[in-house]
Amino acid sequence: MMLELVAAMLDAGAGIGRSLELVAASAAPRYRDTLRPVVSALAIGADWETAWRSSAVRLPEILELRDALGFAAVTGAPSSAILYAQAARLRRERFRAAEKRAASLGVKLVIPLGLCSLPAFICLGVVPVLLALVPSGS
Image (cartoon, rainbow, N blue to C red; front, side):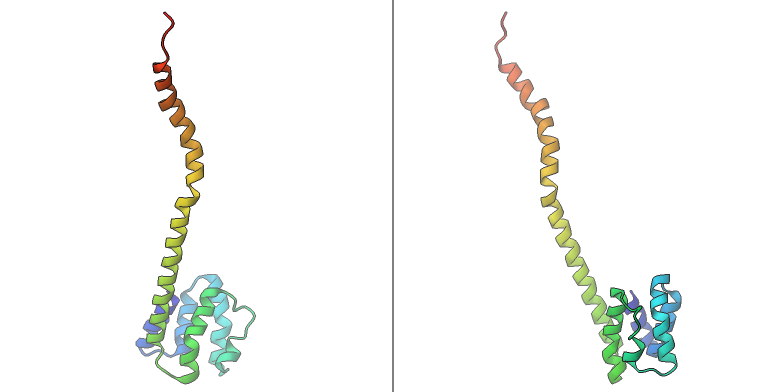
């Protein structure tokens, strides 16, 4: 979502530093604490690599934002299209990963469900039929 927010701000004409500042101001505390040193470093004129060299930049979402903005910040190329494409790619990857986890869940549930339902099936379905087939002694 941060990628798309920054892309929308860049489309609106804001600079990269201002866009990061606005995202940092409205983000969750853990993202805000990670982005504030970067925004401050960019505001005082640090180059891109120096601004992101902080040890606090370890969150995967922030690293994805850094990587997506890196090309545009260094070369001056229009970056909103890059950010939208990156956001779409990440969304597709996460969707595929969720599909794989859902597919593997069906396989993982076979044994527990079988262990729970097989005794019930035997007690309620097979045993009464077998008892009905046994000839009575009278």
